Image (cartoon, rainbow, N blue to C red; front, top):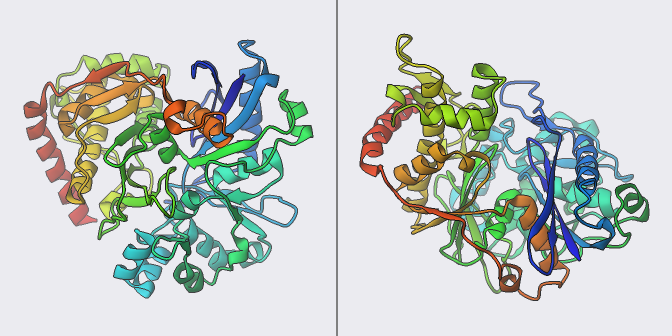
Length: 494
C-alpha cells in the first residue's frame, strides 16, 4: 500500500509515492521539465494560472504512474504541499476568476502597510504575529480595490493547495495554518481576525470550511480517479504550505528544531512553542502543522525570494546549455570569495527581511580581466548563502538559536559549494536528508488518514545521509561583513 504526495511549487509540480510499510520513496516525477514561467505584467507583480497548475498536477501523476514501480490503485491517501501566500478566487461554480497572485508579488505592500497602521502595530503583532504586509489578505484587498467586477463574483478564496484539493475532491476547505499564512488568523482570540476582515471589508463568507490540517479534506471524485488511474474515494488527508511541509518532511516538529530549504525561494524555518514575532515583521510567524489551541506550535519563517530564482536567472543568461550539475562543478573551481565578485540576489520582488524593500539583484566589483564563469556561479551561490546568514541573524535577535539545521539534499543543497558555504557562513552544522516536499506531503497524508498513529511512527525510519560542519568560517566572516556593508549602502539608497 502507498501514499501519494503532491508538491505544488513555483517552478514545477513534484509528486512522489511512498510505501507505507517501509516509508520509502518508491517513485518520483516532475512536470513540466522546464521551470514554469511567472507572469509579471508590471514590475513587482507575479502571477500564475491555477488551471495550469491543475493540468500540470495531472500530467505529473500520469508520468509517475508510467514508471511501473507501483500499482496506482494501491494508493490509500493523498497529501498536498503548496507554494505559500498565493490567492486563488473562484465563483459559485468553482471556476477560477483570475490568475493567482502568488507569494513573491509585491503589489499589495502599501495596502498591508495601511492595515498595519490602522489596526495598530502592537495589536497586529500580538494578534496576527505579523504585519498584514503583502500576504494573501492584502492581495484580496487589492482585488477588491482594483478589480471590483471580479471581487463581486467571488464565492470562495483559497490558497494554492486548497485549489488542487478542490479539483481532486470537489470540496473547498482550509486550515488554521493556511489562514495564518494568509494573515487571516487571530492567535490571541483563536478565530478569524475581525480586525483584518473589518478593515479590508471582507466577508467571513469568503473563507472556506476550516478543518484540522491532518484530516480528511474530501474524497477523490470518480471521474478524476478514472483519469488518473487511482482508486475513487481515497481521501485528501493533508494540506500544508511548502515551508511547514518541508519542516514536516525533515521531522522538524518540536520547539527548537530548525529546517532550511533553498528552492525557488530560500527559507529557514524554526519551530517555537511561543507566540513570538519580529517587531519589524522581517521574519514571520505562522501556525505550524502541529499547531492546536492547546499546543501553540508556531513556525518562525525567514524567506528570501531571490534564491533558486537567482541561480536560474544566472544559468539562463550565462550558461543556458549547461545543467545545474555542470554549474556546481564550475563554481567549485573558483576560490572562496569568488575573486572579489559580489552578488546581491534580491531581484524577485520585495524582500520581507529587508523591510519589504525591492533593491533588485546586482553583481558588484566585476573585473573584466579576471572574472569568469566559475567566479560568477560561485559568487551567486555565496550571495545566496550570505542572504541566509543575514536573515538568520534577525532570527537570532528574536530568540531563535539553532544548534543544528536540517535540510533535504535537493535544489541548491545539491551543490557542495553552496551547502558548505551555508554552513561556514552561518557557523551552524547542517544535517542532510533524502526527503523532499512531495515525500513529506505523502507522509503527512498517512498521518491525516490515520494510517500512521503518530508523527513518530511516520518518521520511524528517518535517517541522516550526511552532516556538514563549519570548515572555513573565519575566512568567510570577513567576506560576509564586506557583503553586508555593500547591502547596507544599497538599502540606504533605496
